[in-house]
Image (cartoon, rainbow, N blue to C red; front, side):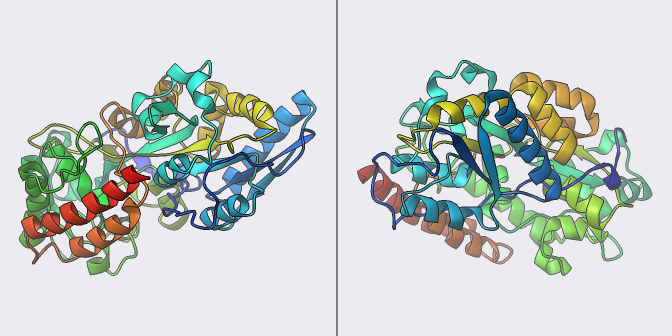
Amino acid sequence: MTPTHTAARWGAALLASATMLTLAACSSGGATDGSSDSAGLTVMIGSSGDAETTAVTDAVTSWGEENGTEVDVVAASDLTQQLGQGFSGGNPPDLFYMSWDQFQTYASNRYLEPYAQDAENADAFYPALRDAFTYDDQFYCEPKDFSTLGLVINTDLWAAAGLTDADIPTDWASLESAATTLTADGVAGLSFGAEYARIGTFMNQAGGSLLSEDGETVTADTPENVAGLAEVKKLLTDGTLKFPADLDSGWSGEAFGKGAAAMVIEGPWINGALAADYPDVNYTVAELPAGPGGKSTFTFSNCWGIPVGSETAEQAESLVTALTSDEQQLAFSDAFGVIPSTETGAAEYATKYPENAAFVTGNDYAVSPVAFAGAATVITDFNSALEGLATGDPEAILADLQTNLQDALDTANAQ
């Protein structure tokens, strides 16, 4: 089975997505004063570790020296909280990480400058990433990198079970078969989190979606979504799928590293986690198997946000242009493992790191999880219901989601 990882080849994990923020303390819309005058910039990041902080600081400092601008990089201990405090206090950073799950809230409240719409490199980014940071048909902020979900396979357990490259799952039937073969001696064939951010891919692979194409109607209770949940329930009742908690693990990456799960559905952040904690695990990454509706995976990203009306917006945009160049994004890839957000940069990354090519290929058909303003609370309740899916009723779970998510969407659309 090739290519195969050894976890030690990789550095720190990718930035984990932040939780949704409701900016109740902020006034609606309007310009901000920014956190600095025209002589300098403050950049706030949510760092995955020292490698990311150092790489971003070096890149920003280099730009500052070339442009005669002093730049202060702040690695937030809690990006969601500190960014919210900055906006509520009328003193946000000049440039900051904005995650996919917070974007709709900030954009709908008019806190972000839609600078990306007219950027010269606007068409360089993957369409799925542009869509993730588009609100009211405006492309607001340039994505800094991305990650998708793939099927991560322990190659030692795979070979020991007598499986070959020909057995790598390409559809649900072959996923079931491989998971069954790998489930033995206390090892679960498959594991992933009991959450929409993982299970939602099965709904999409069945041809489902939580929203209509125009984004105006919730479509959670469709037969396709029911089929997606039913497939996950089947894996659970067959005993070939175990949620991490059932394997005494905090997340599926831990279960994978301990050898308690032979396959997991995770993103490229697992590379750094395994390198740090389980460096002897050998593994490979495949695309997620297709369902009856075709291939699908989720894409997760952060963009470079700029406050609306900021006096330093022009400087910040210049810095973003430098940070999102292929050359700089590939340097970030080398430093802390992220995948470039531009199509050309990602293609070069896939060539350089063929063991991660499946993550890159997935973005060709990936979609972003639902994240409109107000959706987070509903999805949290949905996640709680998914924890009991093994004995639950997919139709009933989705009926509740339909009602609650539609109420949230109606509220968001009324704003």
